Amino acid sequence: MSDVRRPVVAVLDYGSGNIHSAVKALQAAGADARLTSDPQLVLEADGLVVPGVGAFRAVMEALRASGGDRLIDRRLAGGRPVLGICVGMQVLFELGVERGVDTEGMGEWPGVVRELDAPVLPHMGWNTVRPDPGSKLFAGLEDERFYFVHSFGVQEWSLEADGPFASPHLTWTDYGAPFLAAVENGPLSATQFHPEKSGAAGIRLLANWIDGLPETKI
Image (cartoon, rainbow, N blue to C red; front, side, top):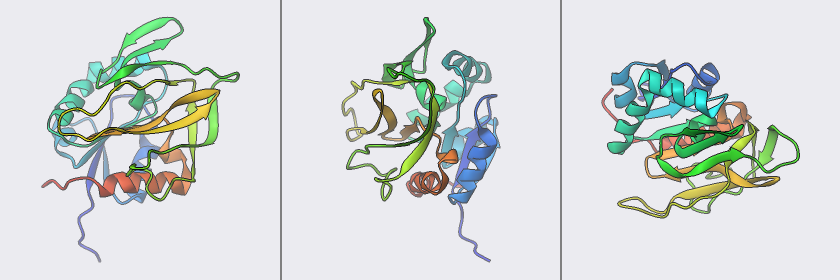
């Protein structure tokens, strides 16, 4: 029996997201994944995953009602890793525009989430991605396909390198027009696609993220 410590990853339970699938995928990728709303565990875990499905406004309202937005801010202020998935990525940006309704996001990154410029929505199914050459998330996965289910996304990026962090690594996908499929920016990473629904490639991507987590004393 191995006594090697598995990194503790908290999966934020705030009432939104494909949470049980995310927990299982993280466990398969090598993490001690724990579905939780406990503030102490959320803050102290080696990594935090923020899932999200549905409407931008509903996810932001659920995050604010649970205090999840403040916990994410506190982790990032301390340089602690966070990974957003699907709408959990979208709400990290400044603004979401859905059906003519503007909703303020968390503002961790500048940018607006808008409806994709594509003839058929939602964008549902497998698609290739174009990772940045320096990406750690996509190491060894440059030619893989990932599973998307969404109608909205970020189609422009304006943030440059700032402070102690290197330039963000941006991964793009094309569906009608280019949109961001993933961002790696210091302790904050996110994917528009669902790693937990992306088979072996998704597990490998989560393992790459887990491998980069600094160890805590949990």
